[in-house]
Length: 227
Ligand code: C5P
Image (cartoon, rainbow, N blue to C red):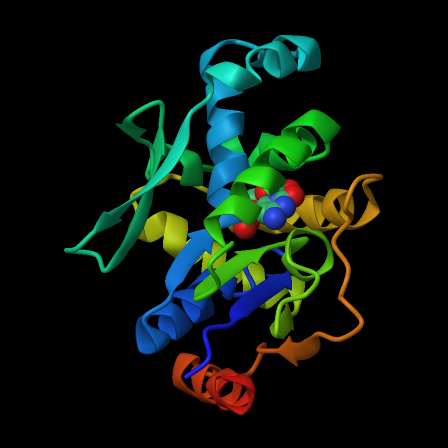
């Protein structure tokens, strides 16, 4: 079988990572969650005080980019890799609503994007990778053999996210999650650098009314056609 690159892009909380993990497991590919990388950079900026409490010190963050080391470490108990920021597992911290509230502004910064895009290109250079994000099929791997663009209604996505955060013990309100999802969609699709948009050759996939198994089966069929 040919090893290919699978790019999964789309709006926030459309289930990209669930699908990407299923595909990676089935095909024995590496899974890369690029959102986790933008989230880890955001967490760093918050911990350093560059962001938060009314601050948004872009220069401070840009000057520190060389000090930010990002790494994915496979956790065999979970069956997927977790995000490490400067050798610390930050998988939990990067998923909070606090980080979600700033991440899209950090992801607009040109210097942050070019650094993360080149890391991502390096991670996928040998193919056999499923990568999810916002610009994978358009910028990171425009030559990817299979591109999927995922959508679902904002309300369905907010409900999914809300349940996820409640399960993790976060004290959140549904209205705040819906607002965050809509705000991130807007910033992600309207930014100057690599805005979120469907690649011309991507398969558009609305999973508002599909179960996880159905969703996986449909996309896996597409993957088998190109492998
Ligand atoms: O995928 P996730 O929702 O965790 O991504 C968090 C944020 O990171 C997105 O809302 C977007 O602003 C940014 N992002 C991006 N490009 C990517 C992946 C994520 O700009 N490839």
